Structures are given as C-alpha cells and as structure tokens.
Length: 76
Image 1 (spheres, one colour):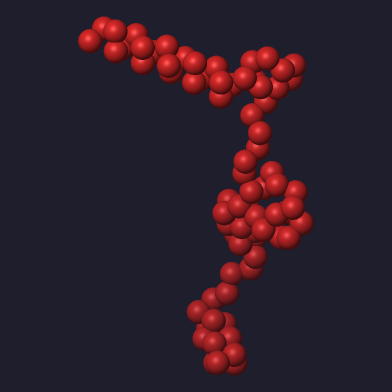
Image 2: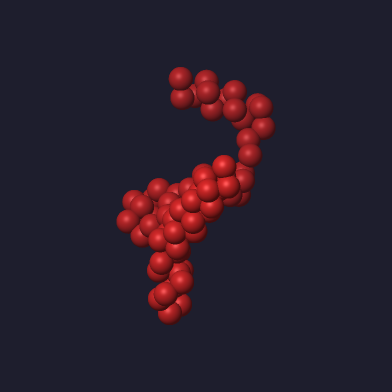
C-alpha cells in the first residue's frame, strides 16, 4: 500500500515538472495564455470571451418595455 502511494507521488511530481518545464527552467518563463481574449487572430475577427461580451452588453443603453414592443412591431 505504501509503495503505491510513493509511486503515485513520484509520478505526480514528474508530471508537474514536465508541465512546468518552461516555467521552471526558462528565464522569465510563464504559462501561455489560452484565453480567447489573448488570441490576436480571434480579436481581429471580433470574437471575444464571455466576460468581455457581458461587459460590452452592460454598457449599452437598456430599452424599456414600451420601446421593446414598438421595436418588435416595427421589425416583425
């Protein structure tokens, strides 16, 4: 039982070292940014993450119910 725990701990430590290879051994190393907002190509296409889209939606003017009904009647 103890051997399984030791082997698991060693394998876990090796896995962490392999995942953090760039971080630990490269000067000023950092994890790559996998967020949509960090991808230049997606930003150029106008694709944002959900947080950014929510923030932009919060800035727009809200319509009251009468304006919504009028807009629906005009467009449909």
